[in-house]
Length: 95
View 1 (cartoon, rainbow, N blue to C red):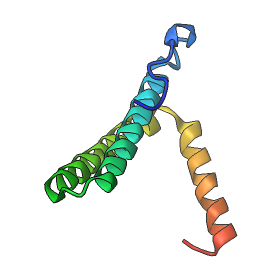
View 2 (spheres, rainbow, N blue to C red; view 1 turned 90 degrees about the vertical axis):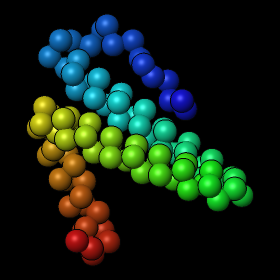
View 3 (spheres, rainbow, N blue to C red; view 1 turned 90 degrees about the horizontal axis):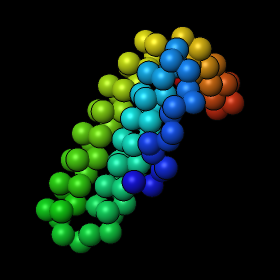
View 4 (cartoon, rainbow, N blue to C red; view 1 turned 180 degrees about the vertical axis):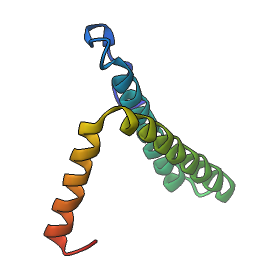
C-alpha cells in the first residue's frame, strides 16, 4: 500500500471515529486503484492487463460504497464537496 494506513486512530474522539475509518477505507481503495492501473500499464500481457483493470474497476465501486457511508455521516463533507464542484464549474465554465 502506498499510503500510511492504518493510522493510529486512538486519539480520534468517539464521535468521529467512524468517519475516519471510512476515510481510511477510501484511501486504501484509491491506492489499490492506482497500483492496479499502473501495473496494467506496465505489462504487455493482455490477460494480465485485462484482469488488473477489472480489479481496479471493482475497487472504484468500493470507493463509492465507502463514500456513500461517509457522506451519510458527515454533512460538512457533503457541503464542502458541493462548494468544490461549484468552484470548478465557475473556473472551467462546465457543469
